[in-house]
Length: 430
Image 1 (cartoon, one colour):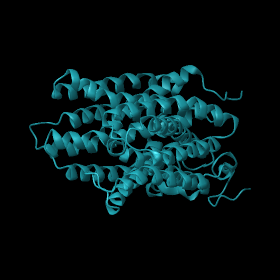
Image 2 (cartoon, one colour):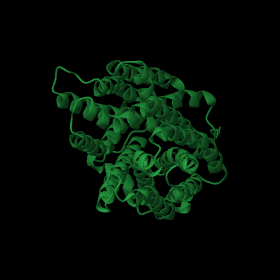
Image 3 (cartoon, rainbow, N blue to C red):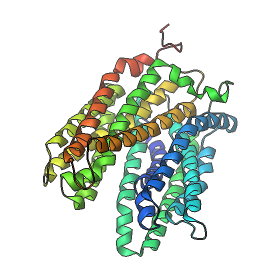
Image 4 (cartoon, rainbow, N blue to C red):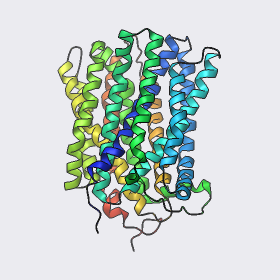
């Protein structure tokens, strides 16, 4: 019997919720930790930033190796849920101690191990959770349903993580607020993991090839996969540049810092609202075409920001609305396309592919953040308000250029369905 193109609702309902705590946990580590440790614990901002950069780079390097090891482990034990479970307790403890460091130790000795443990545990649980979607269905459209449901839950998690710290600190002392924040994450993490144990989500994982562990790069030898990763890198770099400059833009260009939470809320809600449309459009056309139109929409949104200035809040609300709508496609469609690539490769398994996918995503984050701030400094911008034109162009033009480059590379016939009918590493068709 042919597998249905849309998974059963019960499958989506069991699979999607774990995306919420994963996103809830990731956002504060990037956005809140530097400010918290600089203001509350007196660490230098540069020192915290350097630690975050080094641990992030180390995390990115080991992701492909974790992916390959995960494939072998899951093949021996019959499912990935055990690996997801392995990461739960380290994730919970490390997140708690990141925001509530041990005062009996020097602060650096509490922060560094907690950060390393968080990244490793997050990679093991998150990577295998992503790989599950590739193995739950082999159908082209069914995978879009799975990734859309997962990323929709993730956007809800991002919203909660963005809003909750401020709400808690309004009603609780600072220390109690951060303890409550960490406990919310722990509760969400374990409750969202429970449905993953349902037998309907278990699929056998095929035995991996016997190639050496250092051959984790094999998927990159396939032209369609290499092109997909290049497009994903550019698109994510554009998103990272905009995210890095978001607070600067709202504060110094719009002169409305108190509106920042509202703009973030609009952005992420738009992302969640746009996912059903991109899912529908990818069914009618293709995933790559839908993603291409979404990036074009984001490009126009970023370019529109060039026209903004002090007090033009409605204009920036439109920028957040349209770039947020595009975000829904950015989150849901690339992993679904990558899942299709795993079927065309008889040697590598989903864990190997998604290990590389996470590595590329983290590299894109480093590229975006590492490029834009030195560029603005070179152009003469300063936080005191000098050369604001550089900030305006950096926020609007640089992401738009990245997106346009990605659109140019994203030729659907070379990334999506037709491109996967290859049998050789060179991409030659039979």
